[in-house]
Image (tube, rainbow, N blue to C red):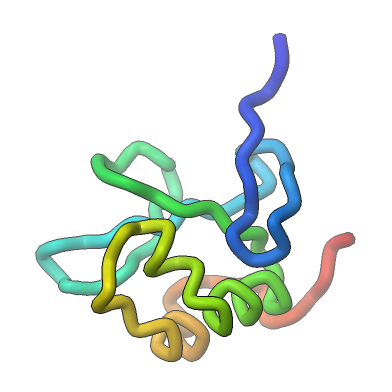
Length: 92
């Protein structure tokens, strides 16, 4: 059986769903949060766990656009250690 494929909003590369992180809008916090189980309701965007992909997605404002939100703080996403991005350790 084929694994589900998703597109990274940073590099636009297609990869297995398990190789990407899902980000969603949390209305209670009023912010973008990680969805580690990929089961939270609502729109989500997918990004590789690489600093280069996150930086590109933030620079292009692709996370907010993918979530259809105009109030996403892309700089906060880039700076927030709570997102657990692997701090630039490239895997490809």
